[in-house]
Image (cartoon, rainbow, N blue to C red):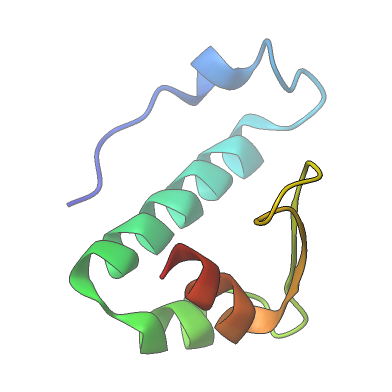
Length: 78
């Protein structure tokens, strides 16, 4: 279940980002984790992740680097 957010709390971190965009971004991330928790990878692939997804994990370590596409990102979260 998605919870209510106060997107004005994020304004200090992203002062140039309009409140409606901050709210949509928070809702999208929550939806992603909700789908992960339910094991609903099809919805993540078709409705949450962009078709040209590139996910960068910082650092010089075994999990760092670039993940290309939904399948690589989902495999990382595993």
